Amino acid sequence: MKTTGFPLNCRALGFAAAALALLTVLPAPARAASTSIAVAANFTVPAKRLAAAFAQKTGDNVVLSFGSSGQFVTEITQGAPYEVFLSADAVRPEKLAAIGLASKSSLFTYAVGKLVLYSAKPGYVDAAGKVLASGKFAHIAIADPKAAPYGAAGIEALKALGLYDTVMSKIVTGKSIAQTYEFIATGNAELGFVALSQVINAKGGSQWLVPAADYQPIVQDAVLLKAGDNDPVAKAFLAYIKSPEALAVIRSYGYATKP
Amino acid sequence: MGAAAVLTLELASLTTLVLLMLGVPLAWGLAYAKGWWAEVVGAVVSLPLVLPPTVLGFYLLILLGPNGPFAPLLSHFGLTTLAFSFPGLVIGSCVYSLPFMVQPVRGAFAALGQGAWEAALTLRATPLDAFFSVTLPLARGGIATGALLAFAHTLGEFGVVTMIGGDIPGKTDVLSIVIFDDVENLDWNQAGRISAVLALFSFLVILATLRLGHRTERT
Image (tube, rainbow over all chains, first blue to last red; front, side):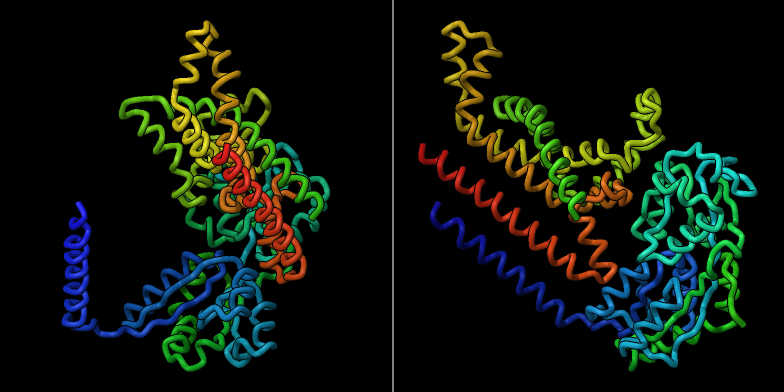
């Protein structure tokens, strides 16, 4: 009884040592360079496609993180190791540049977003968005306007339509535009405001493209962050996003691009 | 912050109350049950200890929603979903805090054995009477510990509420969510104040739980 513990530990130790030895003997994999990028949630799908195309072209790896733009700014000010920031607005990258956390000269607009009123139910949202005034829904999902530019645009649109006060009590808030979409897609919210890029390829459901005059243009800027200052991969990825090939991909998800 | 604090306390209290009613009988059954199925039920009850709250939240979002199994029942009350509502949060919190109620109570029942209850039965007490006037009082230490832990755990709940709450002030915006939103919007003074209050309060609850444990050990 009193000796059983010891040999067992010995064996475990030996096993661990053998594993370690094996690790040092095995050839190290060829080191692919990589860059980590903070991506506003509305740009999730195109970012994945761009990253894959970039990796195929250059052999370099792009690690994508998705969240709300506000969330990323908080993380970046706290030293998060992102090298590039694809924001959902123009204000936040500008702010980061102003406090020395991003390179001002690298700022450029990679996409101009469009706002959509979306429902998972076919035929629920009509072609003129009149459903908003009908008041027949219990929940309308909007991303947190303080953290997500598409949320702010949704609130602006409701105000422009003169409906904000009547639907205010029905608003449920998603932490990001991705969670907002999830609330709608699961049917828990009958409808809500999302990015066109999220539903442009949606099968089923119903949507209304909110007129551009009802909200401030959603100008989405990219910026090189301080952590990426000396990383050629980060710079190469930013350059790739500006290429005609990448811009065509971005437009295919319903964004406008600046020439 | 005031409304969020009240809401948080309401949620934790109501959850604890529901869990007392559901968790104590469940713990009793598990403590004395023999057979493999008791282990299966025990494992299911303990799942929320290890599952990410996001998994619970995701399942709840589907189950409580218009495509879930409760949808026909909900439509009788003119509702389409229990997400984004206080009752929805209570259901979520009960699932999330269930093991914190059941484990200590199950332990207390198991340590007690069935001797006292059987003795009461031989004195011609009905099973229900024996349970309420003999078993429950003897297990009160474990029950109080379970209630305190469930209460404290619900106070600190974040993941499940994030997934199904929808951030509605006064309805689903509990303190942990307010802190998250404050941090995200760089209002760190407010976040710091609420965090300090929560930390102190949680500390006191745990301290109370530990003291309770000592007292019941001694007696």
